[in-house]
Image (cartoon, rainbow, N blue to C red; front, side, top):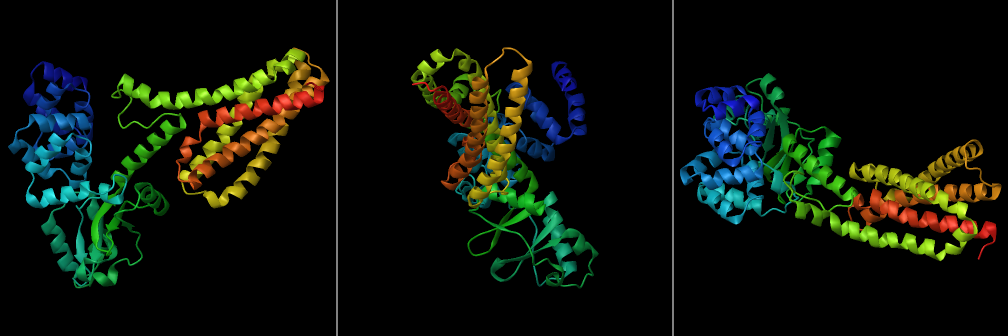
Length: 445
């Protein structure tokens, strides 16, 4: 990066061009993402035709938009012609209508129709992320004919690792690994060596479901069919990695009580970032007033036994942490398909047993600490805190384990039931338990 900046400042055009040629195109895109628009455009124009399309696909959407806006129609036509269709669609989904119009105007009619078709698929569907750059073969041809067709297509991508076989009316009937094709005799019929046991998805399938299939079956690509079982595209592993990255980012943001943001941290504006955070903070702040109301209601208890107040932070923190542990594991299990709403009873029973073990261990640690370290407390206070701690752990584990399941059952994102919300709910429950136990054991009004 420093070398490229130095060459730009010294107007070393020829040296810069050689340096870009020696670099991986993804690394070139990463460097361009760090330059201002003017320098980025200057460097981008130095790229060869083949490299420019791949670098463009890996640029930030804002830089892609700037390039299209600054290019004339001839340059746009030449650039978009070499960019893979799925990458073009991904770019067009992020830019203003004027940029979309300029790109479509400079596409040939066939490509324009395909782009419009892809843009009409739901945003999170298989159709919106699939590509049409793949090799399809009829099952009735020979190996020699298949190899001849592959050479004629000249598809320059890893999608050639798997070939997709179609029957009558272009219905999808199987797949064929490229190594099986290359090692078969020339006169072998494709149908005799193709794999009829395949995994496929529909154009309307949710991309999270597709990502789960990639993980479960260790796929590098998956065919996409329409309602008539006709092959319309494929989804490759590089697209699914992007999907997984986006979904994980969205879940992390929800688990931190923020509205999801499409931009990176540094490119998200201050007001936009504040807007994404403030709604949930308001919800949590208002819900936290319930905790204050409970403390107000039991003010007489605190006045009668002031020592009880010193253990409130410990109880609330322990309860919140226990709930967060459980909710994190359950949310992960739901995301990976390991758990479902049908497992709710099993989950509750398991969390109950875990809570009992954890609760007894924490109570034992509290009693040992109280006996060794100051301040000294009475036996009655130790009993109150111990019972409250044990019950708080059980309640927290059950809440943390069941709320994500309930959210999933009613169609909400389980990630919403994460640390901040769980902590707020458990804080309320822990105080309620603590003061009720204290009231009954101390016989307070």
